[in-house]
Amino acid sequence: MKQGFVSGLIEVGTQIEERQTLEDGLHDLAELAARSLAAGRCSVMLRTQAEGSETGALKVCSHYGDLPEAAYRETVSIDSSIAGRVVAAGQPLLINDVKHSALAALARQGDAAGSSLMSAPIAVAERVIGVINVSQPSGGRHFTQEDLGLLKVFAVFIGKSIQVFHLQRLSESRLLQMAALLERREQEGGAKQPISPDPAKLAKIVAKGFYRELALAGFGPEAIISVASEVLGLLNENLGRHRSRIEGTKR
Image (cartoon, rainbow, N blue to C red; front, side):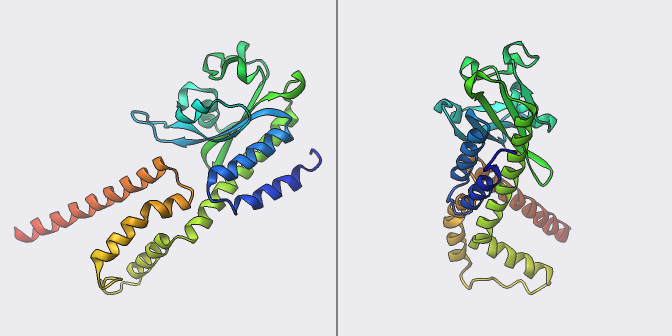
């Protein structure tokens, strides 16, 4: 293993806990990965929902190097990119001649990315949530299996870092603390008394803090929308059961 790799990884991992956003922490890891592998470019892509797609898509979350700014505005479907193939298969990939490989048609960055690239899946709780990509090896060389092994270590570390980051931010969230209190009250079978004597005021506070709390927990806009949609879905489900009970009582 390359000199200073482990110490650098631990140092960056510690810094991630102090970052305000997940993107900032992942940028540090992307930079360390690129430098450790003597590569000019490294990007971290995370899964996101795509309209009309059952498999979802990937979106750049952070990067190091000369990745075009337009890459942040694009979503890449799982089945139409090299990174997507890595996510779908859950296996790392090393290609040293992209143009003449079986996946040449899926290459998206053209000559700017170079002919040699590596990708490794990022997993959290055994679920693949993204991919780390490295390209542009220095000195005109090609990546090796040893390089791929190091990238796999980074992928594992990034997955753990994302999990810890979210858990840490959520543990500081008043929204989560309120949810935990409600769950505990339900499990204990307590009386259905409101937490606040003014439910309307409480609802306003929760609504006002919803976006801020989830943003601080590292969730991006699309993830926050997904959470909000889930809340509305649960509300509609509960209202449906309530209507059914009322209609059953009237019969």
